[in-house]
Image (cartoon, rainbow, N blue to C red; front, side):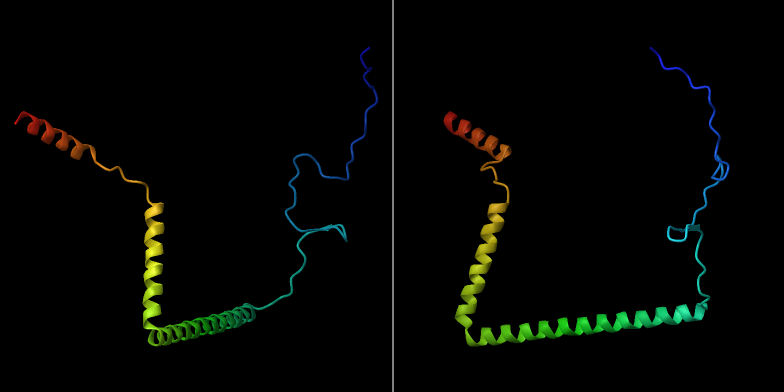
Length: 135
């Protein structure tokens, strides 16, 4: 059997938001159950700019220090390489040759295989063979 329709009407809550009412865009604080943007301390623009300048200066110093350490490490590696080449010239030459050979081998293996003869070259060879047979 179908359900009976209820004839009782429910009362609407008039305290809450109504349909079509704009929703406030703000911060909702669940602790105090308040909606809105909390008051910000009044800071002057000059104070904020000074703080940003200090942060930029600190970043510049960090970048400068990092660049110097990288540059020093590169110089140290260069000096060590020069010393190794001067002390062991034959060994260095063999190592460089082996590295170049390994790279060439890897590049050759990585490249797609070529066809032995291009179609135009094959046609020329066939033409040459037919002319040779006629003579």
